[in-house]
Image (cartoon, rainbow, N blue to C red; front, side):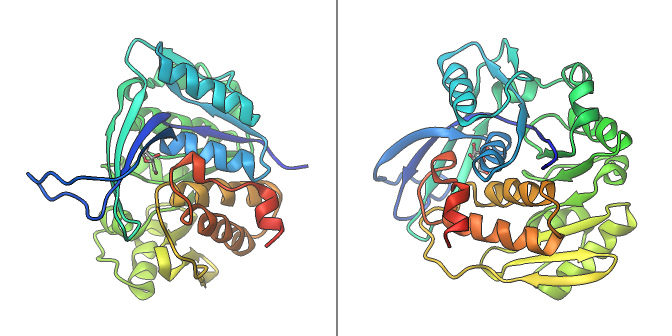
Length: 301
Ligand code: RIB
C-alpha cells in the first residue's frame, strides 16, 4: 500500500495567452488564443500526484469567489481530499501567463488567498501533517507556514519534499527539515551561491546544500535531464526527447510524480525516471493542470 501524500501550497486560476515572442519591458505584443484553467504550483503538484496514482490530500487557501469554487470542485472531482482547504477574505490566486513559440513562459502571480495561509492554518492541520508519509511543498505561500509544516512533518518522521519555487530567502533551519530538495539550476544557484551551469557545478552546489542539512537533492535541468545528488554519489537521469509546446507545470508534474513513485516504495532513481516521463508528456500540451498526464499514459509508454 502506498503512503499518503500531503501537498501544502498554492491554488491559482491561470490565464494564458500564446504569443510568438514574450514582450520586453514597455512592449505590447499581439498574442494568439486565450485559455483559462487550473494552476498554482501546489495545486498542479497535487493534481499530478493524484492523476499518477497517489493518495493525495491538499491544504491550500482560496477566496470566497467563483475561482475558488471552481478550483475546489475540480480538485474534488480528481479524487483529491480537500478537507484541509481553508477560506480567505482575500480573492483566490490568479496567474497571468504568456507562452512563446519556443514553449518558454513568463508568469506573474497575484497571490491573494495564497499569501494568507498562516502558521495557525498549518497548526490546525497538525494531525494530517503528523500522519502523512510524504509532505510536498513549494514557495507560493508564506515561508513561515512552509517552515512550520516542514518542522511538524519531519519531527513525526515524514519525508519532507521541497520544490523551492519561486525562489525566495529561506531560513537556515528549514534545510534541516527537508529530506528531498528539488530546485532547478537557477534556484540552486540562489540557495548556494554557486553558479550552476552544468552537471559538475550542480554537483558542487548540491554539496553546499547537504552541508546545510538537506538529505537528498534532485536538480531539474530541463532538456539536460535531472541530477540526483545524495551521500552515495550522483546520477544523471536523461530527459526524454520530445517537442515542447508549453513548459508550464512541467516541474510541478515532475515533483508530483516523483512523490507518487516514492510513496510506492520505488528507489530515488526509478522515481526520477518515472517523473521524467510524466513531465515529458506535460510539456507537449498547453496549460498547467490541463496538461498533467494520467497514470495509464505512463504505463502504456
Ligand atoms: O508552475 C506553474 C504554475 O506557476 C502556474 O500554474 C501558475 O499558477 C504559477 O503558480
